[in-house]
Image (cartoon, rainbow over all chains, first blue to last red; front, side):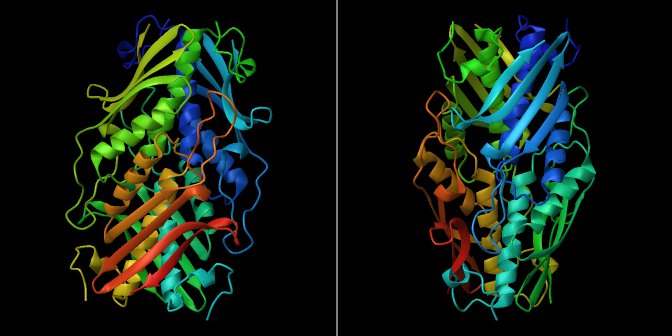
Length: 123
Length: 123
Length: 123
Length: 123
């Protein structure tokens, strides 16, 4: 099955719906991380909403949930604002292409000590 | 006069309050532009608020107003979302250091055909 | 087959090598696009190299080729430098996970009038 | 004195050459920081060159020197690449407008525990 998108014909024709949903979700995780890392955090909830809505504007992303966690102010002065770091950004996305739905996440894994982008569940 | 910030002693001691306010505002204009350009736009108002609050978290910025204007969807499909471009981003900031207040802007200048960062008024 | 990476156990166990290679490549395309769009272009070749090497530092990316095309200076003054735009960035990547190799691209598609990220060939 | 740039007339007419040089340098420091923070580091020297050249493409920036220092790989696997952090980026710039030259820096200040953008010397 296909979504009938005009861009589809540029893809390898052997690509499955699962694979396409995974591709679109991977793009979105990479995009959000590198777009927003470093952002000076004013209001946490507003920035979470802006990232969630940015995710939903991307093709085939049907659900998104963003949390900014464990932020600590750096420094001790006027300059002590906080920038969004990879460790403090948690993203959960669902992408859907044709019959396939895929749940993906970005989150800091303490055991690994870095923020991992992962395919959590393929429906 | 000085704000007594612990970072002050690293600055050239001849710098005036006006100059410092201009410096901090220039940093913020450059930061916001390069942080947010390319962001996929979900909800315009939420993104405007996130950028405004990001500005206010920066040192010595006391007012900010952000407008996203003239956005056009590119393309004709699932992919036809909009990314924040330099031409569509308008920022107005006021920075204050000691007795000096400075109003700065980023906006597309039709005559010049590019987004100009400018010092509008020094109080 | 698996690559034996410590992050693997966080993935849905039904994910295939093909799917994992596609996921990692999708992340990298999204990351590069949103990291580098808006960069003021000094020397084109140096920036192309920096983006290529950035791609190769990402997990499971084994080949990358980056071209910056069709750049036009905006404006008519000191300010008339060029920023990297989505339309002028071309990326070709190969990711490899286990036995699967996948070729992916980012390029402006004139028919669609936007930069498309696509899975060109699955080996 | 003025540089005769077509954008000049949009500025507060009381702005001095010193102030204008400080403004342009501040913009560039903020721009470089927020453009490049988060970049996956492939080859350190190539990325340093790309940032330097990006600085020189900005209006009124006549010298730039960039160093990436103290990078540590995070994690212990395929994913253990390094992203450019604020603490590891050092930038030195000279801006010139009319008769004024200004030296500016971005560097981590251990005493403050954050990366400070500062006006080092006004000539």
